[in-house]
Image (cartoon, rainbow, N blue to C red; front, side, top):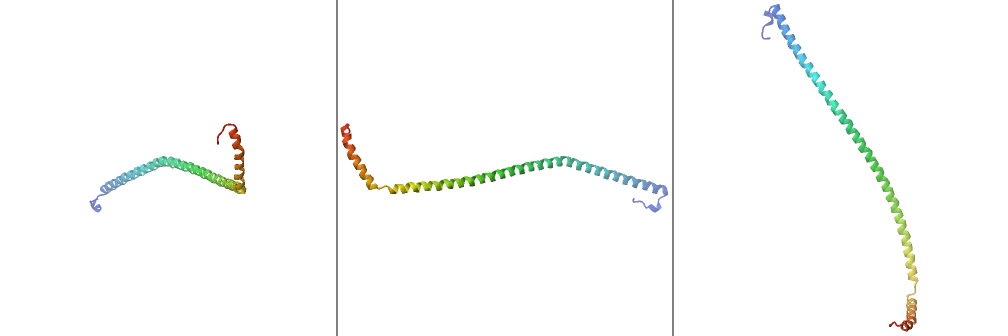
Length: 136
């Protein structure tokens, strides 16, 4: 409004007021349209992202459930390994006892007497072997 408002007639003032009101109405319509567009964009964004977020949360829940199952399975496996190691340790102790017992019996054998018995057996079997045609 470059015109000086004091010098205008009432009619001209009313025209200027009407022009100003039209500009304000146009600005209001533009603002309202922009606001409607923003609301529509927000609704569209929500309609896209909410299902994605729900799907992602469902996948996270499934993954956590599977991870929990794996952890439980791993715990059971560790318990079974502990039991197996305990059983294996018992077998080793039993076998060690058996080997020690066998070694003590082997140590009790009189080697000199055994050698003498073998020589006497050989002296008895030698004539029999010749009798049946075997040469020694």
